[in-house]
Image (tube, rainbow, N blue to C red; front, top):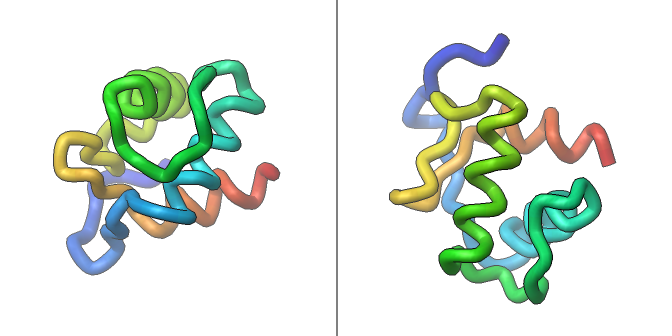
Length: 79
């Protein structure tokens, strides 16, 4: 559905954005840690599983800490 990422669509995963993703992942049972806005190992593993199940592997780069804005818009529309 989303295809490959465009550079201009990439957003850095940090702070409040990451807290929102941690919250969403926790609600869905992927994340069980503190909501702190840091891309630590527990957060990375949880988001990797979550994004993999949603088939967003090509639109998220957790090593670089990047995600596409269209993917974020889609995910947050489900809240």
